[in-house]
Amino acid sequence: MSTAERQRLAPAFAVALFVALLLPPVRAWLESRMSLQMLVQIPLLITVGWLLSAALPPRLGEGIARWNRHGISSLVLASLAGMFWMLPRSLDAAIGEPWMAVAKFASVPLLIGLPLGLGWPHMGFVVRGVFLLELTATFFRLGWLYLVSPIRLCNNYLLDDQQRAGEAMLVIGSLLLAGVAIKLLWGRFDST
Amino acid sequence: MPILRTLLASALLLVFGGAVLTVATDGFHAFTSETARRLAVRREPPPVPAVTLETQSGAHVNLAELRGRWVLVDFIYTRCLTWCLALGGEFAQLQDQLAAPLADGRLVLLSISFDPAHDTPAELAAYRQRFRGRDHGWLVARPTSEGDLQQLLHTFGVTVVPDGIDGYVHNAAIQVVDPQGRLVLILDAGNPQAVAQLMRRKLP
Image (cartoon, rainbow over the protein chains, first blue to last red):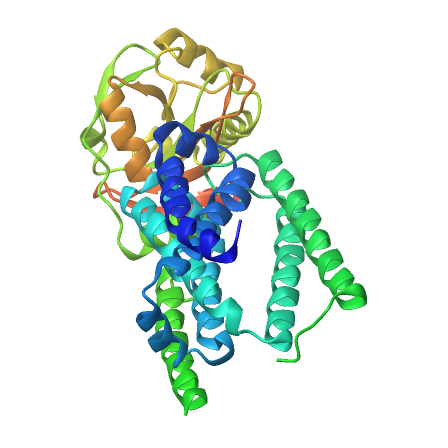
């Protein structure tokens, strides 16, 4: 599949993925465990937004790019929105409060995935490196916290589920780190 | 100039995002819903709903009838083998430590079951018996309808989740209701001395 073809199909795939995530049984299953909500549902919602960035009219994309040198504005927005959805009380509220559920399904694609998708091609080696390492550190920090916390951080989830989520975050952090290391050792870099 | 525009956009995003995060965490005080629930209750005590409960003796009591007294409320289910056991033991200890205000009716202990289908008055009585809880001042009760139960759980901010082995887990705590019938304070379970001390200060 060529790049152009992939770009053409991306929005359709994004919509299909979004609809699938909205299906009540899928939603109920992905929100039944902390690890699934944090590490599957939210990343898939981010993917929806990322794919949508290919569907943006080129003129709008160029307009945004003028305010988004090196993808910096993208990173700021995505990090802030990401912090919000890392709060245990946000995860709790997204299950119990309908308006928080709406906020999650709207803001995770549009305020995290879309800006990252728009900004990523403009990010140079240094910006990407800082972003990936900070992301890795976040996985380690949160993973450690979730693993050792003796109290439940979400009223909707059990303690052992929280610890499984913590372990999974440590694994993801390690994989990210390994990926960055492999890229550094054997990867090819553009000189941007 | 794109770099200046980018800086401006990022600065605006930071200010706006920082404001949202400040509000979302109650000024970086509450990161979990449990902390948030305790803060919210202190800031704006919600009135407890006037629902009717069936007690361990089969009598009916409306929460509105308890106005004029302080009430310590915990949520339990009698099949529980973990937290509610601790809560039950704690209420039995409070019966000893706060015997005077319980005897003259200034204070009531109220355990509310969130498993009313199983917890019949007989089960509720057996639950209190298990902790050698005495008759005075400790009501163990169940809501009489699913709607009432949901209203209670919502007002008190209690979330009940199945534990996967035929039981439940919930955010166990001791809720303090004042004589005006408002939920004013949520205390950690597991420290009856501190609860008794605090109530002695509050009681007239």
